[in-house]
Image (cartoon, rainbow, N blue to C red; front, side, top):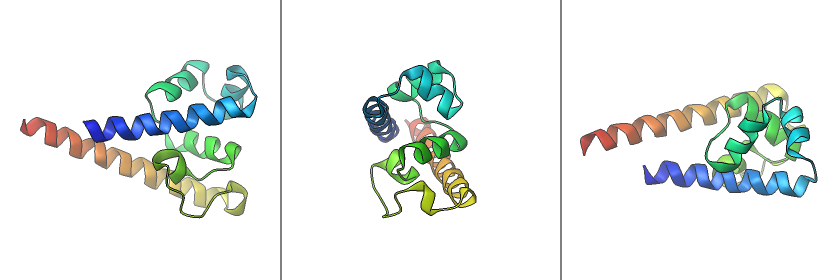
Length: 112
């Protein structure tokens, strides 16, 4: 359970920092990302967005989805350099990895 919380906290810190440095209000950002303001607040605290939301966030802030989720950058910063279908594929892959980690952690916890 610790690893999951660590990943979420790291995403939340990166996302919160990006939002604060954007100079936009929560209402403006929520509209840009096509999410509710409460979802935006949750992402700043303890939730990770769905793949399609990650794509919109990464595109807006010109960062990679990998960096948003892990803090690691594979040298592919800048959403405009890749097509939307490539980013969508990367977002879906990241979401699958998150789900696999979640399932693994749940199975591990059940053992104890």
